[in-house]
Image (cartoon, rainbow, N blue to C red; front, top):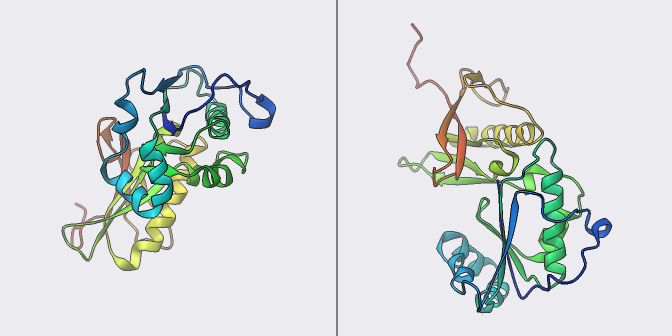
Length: 240
């Protein structure tokens, strides 16, 4: 599933140069919906709230002010009819780039909890002319009830039809290894690999005994997706 919101008064009547933007337009299955003062005027404001918006306001107050005043947005959302290749993602990236070149001022990606300014979108997402899974996903870090431990969890893998990753109770000395594990799973899955339930973690930077289990559902608010839960046996526990 893909889900993006592009803010600004966008001129959709301008012809789409397909070769320039490497796109055939919005893929089949992805709806393109325009909202503004004369059509569902409340929609543009619906995304300007919550934690991602607060981070955006703090990190880029000038652009956030422009977005706050915008009365228009275009929402792209849906499940591509043909997901046998990543062409649907290429087409969507190119189409969004066309939108920001014709009036769009910012892009919101709800799956990543990220607001993009156009220059960053072009540099990190469009210009590479490849899927670049790490630029379509994010690895978040949250505190556990025990503040000496961290929870590493990804968002955005639903764009590739694959589960996100969750690793609880990470100690300081294992943080680099867990980040490496998350990045490997993101890359492998994005290009088609399917992680089997019960697969063992075998990395020199992480302890032995780690197991990957399938968990969650599409309605899980932490991921908006299924996820892979990576865990290790508790210290002192032995197998029988």
